[in-house]
Image 1 (tube, rainbow, N blue to C red):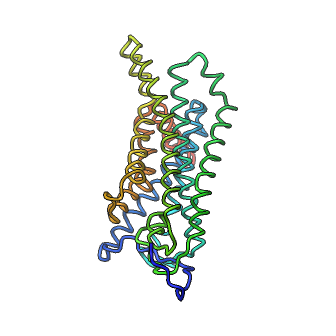
Image 2 (image 1 turned 45 degrees about the horizontal axis):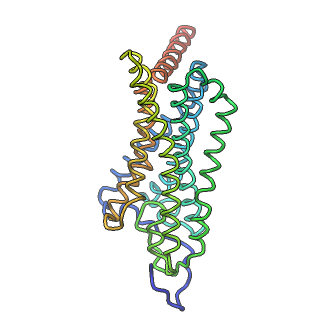
Image 3 (image 1 turned 120 degrees about the vertical axis):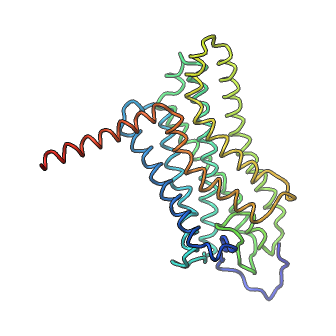
Length: 324
C-alpha cells in the first residue's frame, strides 16, 4: 500500500511492465508466447469441432469437455493478446485504462473460478459413471448436464463480484506501474494508497472458498472411485474404468496444484518474478496442455481425432482425383 498524500491525482491508466528483464530476448518471448497462444486456440477449437461432429462423443463427459475448451480459449485471450502487444509496443502497448484493468481482472477471475467448478462437475460425472453405472442415465441426463454447466458458469460469474467491488473502492494515486503481465489482484493492491486489509482478507476467503468447495467435490468423487475400483476383481476392468478418469485427474492436478500454490500460501514465499512464472503456467501453459492431455490419454477423443483427420485426407484425395 502506498501512503496517501492529499495533492496526488487519481490514477486513470496503468502501465503493465510485463517481463521487463528480457529486453534483448523480447522477439524470442513474443514468438514463444504467440506460438503457445495459437496452439491453444487450434487445440481447443479442434476438441470442440470433433465433439460436435462425432456422434460417439455426444455424451455428458464430452459435453463438459467442450465447455472447458471454450473456457480455455477465452481464459488465455483475456491476457495473452495484451501481453503480446506489450512485447512489440502496438495498440497502446503496455498501457491499460483503469476500467480496462478492473474488467480484465473480473473476467480472468470469473473464468478461473468457472474452470474450478467445471472440473468438479466433470469429477462428479466420472463418479456416477463408475460408482453408480445403473443410475448414470437418470442422474446425469442431458437436462441435469445443462443445469450443472449453467450453475458452474453462474457461480463463476458471481465469484469476482465482491472482490472487484472492493477493488473499485480503493484509491490509486500513484505510481501506476503494475509489475506483472496482466492486471492481477496482488500487484494492484501494492499500488493502492488506501487500506487494503479488508480487500486482502476478502480475496483470500473467496479464493479459499472456491478452491475448497470444488476440490472437496473432486476429492470425494475420486475417493469413492478409488474405493469402487479396489473392489473390482478384474485388473483389466480396473484399468478400463480408471482410463476414463486419467486425463481429467491429470488436468485437475496441474490446475489446482498451481492455483493452491499461487493463492493460498504465506507472503514469505512471495516473489514478483516467481509469481509471474507461476501465473504463466496456470494462465498459458495449462490451457495449452489440457487438450493434449485429453487427446493423448483418452482413447475415444484420440479415435475421433484420427477419424476426422482420415476423413479429411480421404476427401482431399477424392477431390484431387476428380480434378484429374
